Image 1: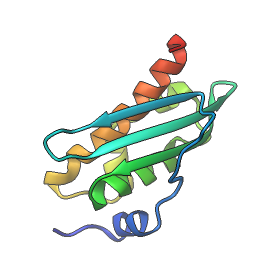
Image 2 (image 1 turned 90 degrees about the vertical axis):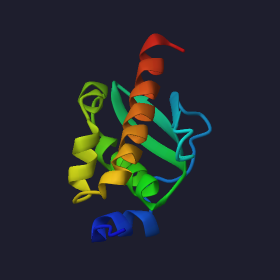
Image 3 (image 1 turned 30 degrees about the horizontal axis):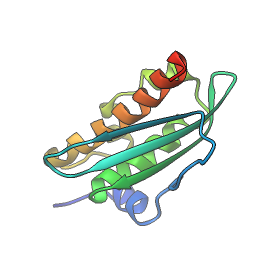
Length: 122
């Protein structure tokens, strides 16, 4: 399986990895078939993502997607982030092997879930 240089960089040196103990919102998604689990923590200020962290248990693609996604979301408004798609992340990484694209969806789903929870006060 061949990964782009950018995917390997995010995998080897993930950005925004960790947790936020006093997060304003947390989202989590998993895939029982491949075993990947992604958890996203958000600090939100004036409807903007002020800080974002992730914890991911999964393959190189899952970790790279989580890292790239957090870079893309940080500093953006909640409305902007809700428009993010898996294709945005895959394109940012320069592509993923077809069998690994599902990993990118988990990250976006966890991120969108966290924002929905924040907006509904859950």
